[in-house]
Length: 253
Ligand SMILES: Nc1ncnc2c1ncn2[C@@H]1O[C@H](COP(=O)(O)OP(=O)(O)OP(=O)(O)O)[C@@H](O)[C@H]1O
Ligand SMILES: [Mg+2]
Image (cartoon, rainbow, N blue to C red):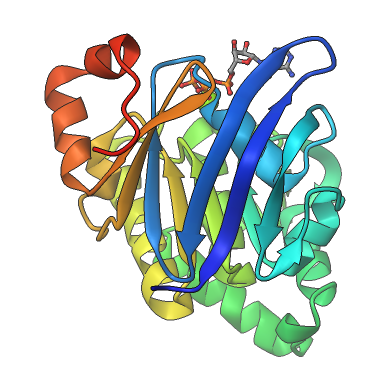
């Protein structure tokens, strides 16, 4: 059995006044690719945010272990340093911080990513080329005025630079044109092959998954994980939607 990188047990969480996630058990092994699907409003993004430690949510019971350590009460920056990465469904804009400086700072915070300024410049140039990104983006303020697709590419740039142990990608494919989708897919593939990182892909679109070998698929309905199965579950959902999961609670597909 693969050693579990992420191990969530009996997790219930929500905002101060609204329970959203109920009794979630989820395990992701090192280097594995998992997919999380479910209808709008099911709680998928909330789960991503709770794994990352977003303070807007409160864990009422259960635990999150990452790489052998209980991270349930760690701050988001500590979780990030431990190797968890979350790409946001709607990436935030940070006025006043040029993208290049932002990337340099987050790399310098990680001892394993310490490199000379020259090596850093080369690595960023290499990844930008891989993602078909113009150098001009690097001097612009982080995400300010970036189009939806450009923001997603910036997240891919961060992913390839940071080489996290687990990347949670929340609808990284949404709003991408066909060319950008294929570039971002190649970025994800590069992360898998170059960094051997684990993936938790939250998506409504199966095209982004075409280049990936999916180990497990999870289905969330109304804040509960109601089914888990192999990659073929994605095709079933693509053809039949979520109706069967909404009407019955299935422990194992
Ligand atoms: N900070 C918050 N404050 C209030 N309600 C919230 C908050 N975050 C999430 N919710 C609610 O929790 C539910 C789950 O939201 P979430 O964004 O996790 O769904 P989702 O599965 O990611 O949906 P989608 O597929 O549309 O992205 C929704 O009803 C949402 O309105
Ligand atoms: Mg969402």
